Every structure is written in C-alpha cells, then in structure tokens.
Image (tube, rainbow, N blue to C red):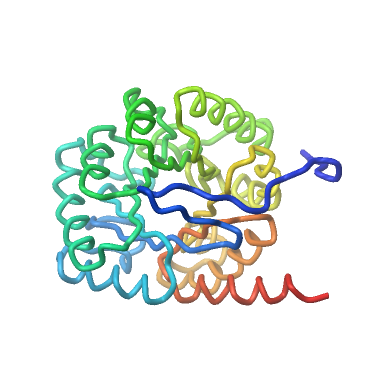
Amino acid sequence: MHEMNFKNTLLPTTFSINCGGKLRVLDKPVVMGVLNITDDSFYAGSRHSDLQETAEKALQMMEEGAMFLDIGGQSTRPGARHLEAGEEADRILPVIEKILQHQPDAILSADTFHAPVARQAVEQGVAIINDISAGDMDPAMIPTAAALKVPFIAMHMQGRPQTMQHHPVYENVVTEVLDYFIHKTAMLKEAGIHDIIIDPGFGFGKNLAHNYTLLKHFGDFRITGCPLLAGLSRKSMIYKLLGNRPEDALNGTTALHMLALQQGARILRAHDVRQACETIRLWDFYQQQG
C-alpha cells in the first residue's frame, strides 16, 4: 500500500485565498454549502429551481455557518445528461443574481466545466470556479480562470460523468491521483492561477475501495501545498456501503467528515451546513486539548 512520510516535510497549515478582493484565511476548516439548480441531482434534497426558494436556502446556509456557496446547474452524477454551456448558464446566472441581490457579501462558487459559463458567472459576482475536470473538459477553462484571477478548485475525475463509473481502474489510486495533481498544479501555476484548491474527486471514476483508500490517504495530498476540499456529502460511497439512500446518508457523511478533518481537509463541501459546521467545532475543540 502506498505510504507517504511527512515527518521531515514542512507542510502548510494555514492558507489564504483571494475571493474577488476578499481575502479569506483558511487557518481552520470551513464549509462550502451545495446549491444545485437541477432537477436530477443524486440527492433530491439538494435540488432547487424556484429563485426565491434558492435565495432563502442560500441565506439559511450562510446563517448556519457556510463560508462559501457552490452553485451548480449541471448534475454530475454517474450517467447524468450533459448540458451545453448556454443551458447551464440559463440555470445558474439568475440564481447568482438573486442571491447577491439579497446577500451581497456571499462568496459564491460556480460549479462548471464550461469556460464561457465561468466567465459569465464571475462577471456577475462569483468569486471561485469549481471545475470537476480541472480544466480537462474545456481547453479554454484554464486560461479563462487565469484571466479572471479567481481561485480555482481542481478536481480529479477518471473518465466523464456519463461513463466514469462503468469500470474505473487504477494500479494505485493514491499514487495516480497524487501524480495528476502534482502535474496539474504546476500547469495551473504556470498559466497564472495561484489560488488552487485540491479535490480528489470522491465518487468520480472511483469504486468503493478506491474512495476509501483515497480518504485513508487524503492527508498525502497536502504535499501539493494547496488547501484540500472534501466532497463526501451523501455520496454513494456512504449509502451503497450502508445499504440505504442519499436521504439516509447524513450520519455517514458526518462520520466521514470527521475522518477528512483528521487528514487535513480545509473545506467540507456539504449539503447539510449546520451539521458540517458542528463537526468542525467538535474536531477543533478536540484538537486544542492537551
């Protein structure tokens, strides 16, 4: 099994990212709330279509403690229908406008792999780009993100959403995903993107064993020098193992969030913001004890 020895390696514990001129220091873990403007996301409780309802949900998430809100118009569950940039923009841009109209201090992330959508979203006030393909699905994404000068969440995915779970294969999932990020972060920095957040992509082209191996070695990814995002919330790695449904996976999500925090996660991307924030509070108090 892959092992990393950090004993003699100086790893950062505090990060700062520039979100549209707002410097956010990640000296402790924070929560990114998930807002899906879709009708087919894997977890029905995360689907939103009514503008006012979505704005109210955004306010609730901020009141519960979310530092960031991730707005997505495209379901990326296995086998999901692919949306072109225009349809995706039509879904998320009115929501972005509505949220910022009511909550101008909200720090929004656009969950998209389309460069034109990313550009429009940032022009409308979004401060972060979250790309499940780390720029691999649209060759214009990396230069676009560099020109926009916003933080970039780079996620690893084997294959594409429509086919990624057919038969994912790795010789060593930790080594291969880590090598991917070592090369990808170098490429992003060379392009002019300096605020990079790493997401190993739990559930994106990984089977159950791959996912738990990645989680067990999640801390290895700190060697990239980038803050780590854990996207575990209500995913199939929880409910398939437990034999239930996404709607029943909150308890399992909390358990895996605690494991991710122990491994160095700085951002928990979560559907259930209050519970994720409570997990961070418990972890933080535990860390402070002698």
